[in-house]
Figure 1 (cartoon, rainbow, N blue to C red):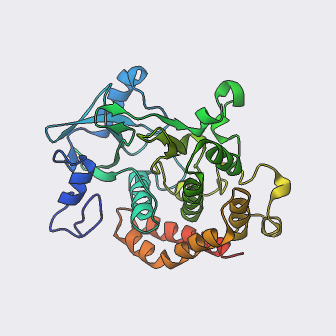
Figure 2: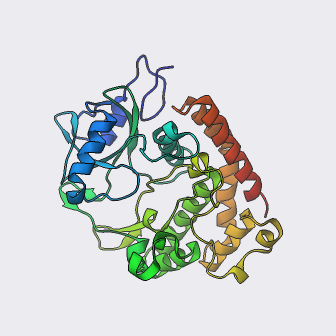
Length: 327
């Protein structure tokens, strides 16, 4: 089946539809569905230019610029981040990483009402798939101030050791949002939506660097669009369900957690209440997850994941829905 590499909608031939091109190119230029490089060429570019590039991380991430309808790697001024199939081995479905991130980001925006970075799949010159996303921390040529929660909570290798990105709790992040954002009563329910969706898809890597605030033109802090969202459990089946502790103190855990030894819907309801989000708001978000499971499974079936990976992701989501139904 030929599909749009961005929306997964059927097409006569594979490509990116005009609406998605417009969004990816920020309304100004055509956007290609083929990158005229191979993975090895781009990885070599990153190795040679890595010290001068601003994007860090374990996964190969190449900064790209769009010039006259062509994507090219760049050392500075890139507006796109391209992620090919990773070089590092993962236990399961290594080739599926780009398709995994793409479908999880697409579901987040189109089904679960999360604001997300614009993204798509593209083909490399040799036909391999890669994931690409447009950076949201630019307004035209002006850089928008963005700070992740490692910065906001003063976490670094010096202060928190090698695993500093994983030191803290989601409750602590929520309290920082409450203290930093003038619109906290809007931002906190959206933050809770992000946590619930990540839990649903098996995203066990929502660490402190993958949650950020950015400034508006009025100078207020708000949550950034969601980014780096994928089902890490698809590749790492034995990982923890959450990257961070849900609450600051184990004594605050819900009785449901104590009884089941995993997070339940009640755990999220109680954490939300401690952050000032009333229980009915969280219940509405839990209900949305259940209502959207059928269209989510249909979207997964249209994705570029292999049938085996599709089955596994659907099974992960069904299992998490059972946990979230415990209230």
